[in-house]
Length: 329
Ligand code: SAM
Image (cartoon, rainbow, N blue to C red):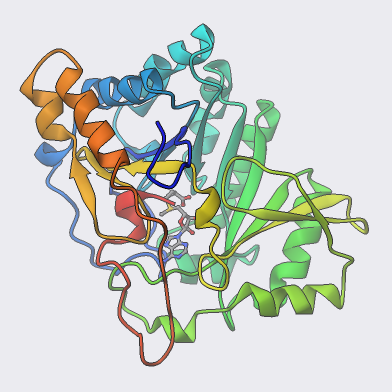
């Protein structure tokens, strides 16, 4: 699949549920209204959609959410999709998780061929963790990380950089993550969906954080890539890598290789734009995949050049109305 700007689309992110067992303050409001369960695609439909994308050239697939591991019978879907790993059609199946359910699932995930996962973790302080996630328990996430590493899964941590929340703690998080053989990626907060707080109070440009990190560490730019938008540095003092995802201060849309599918079968061609294509209707309209395949082609043909997020006092409205939990991180 090649979009109008010549970019090859070979990476699909699938939000398997909009529900989550956390309520991170920058992601959701505390009282979120979720989709009625009957709106969701069945696991069989999700598998059919994923398979159609793989047949059209998707080589990497990431399950996300909401929290992917709270979707009922999610391991059944992962087990079905894993056949494409075994056949060689898919290069990588991975997921982004808050880690709360990992202790239960890590070994099964490893057995099904999941080699890498991203765990979202914004602080190592239990009280702060509770405050930012509203409902989370740091101890359970730590058990999840232990279980994943024990199962041989490579864990990467993702932390959203938040002003006056974790900015001073990030050097400690880097040392801790690298000490355990994990890379850490820092993410700028994006204006997606209404939350209960003012995003200008949370937004921390990574350019600023990078300057501060330079006072403590040597940051050597490296060409390392994992298929996502992060740009990496290596830190000789710790021997590990730090990634920077900077949708606000510097977007990398020119190298965007991905599209995002929601749990209702809506395809978003860009995280930061409203335009979307409904794939549920063509999926359900016939048992064959011709209509679906045409709808996917038509959608890829509309993939926009990029997004343009702004957070400041004048632009203090979400750039897109949907929350990150709809399209997944
Ligand atoms: N529940 C899973 C998790 O916690 O990783 C997957 C979904 S979550 C929406 C994916 C990632 O998006 C998390 O790392 C989360 O911190 C991040 N995220 C959520 N809202 C965000 C926002 N407004 N700006 C930047 N990152 C955000």
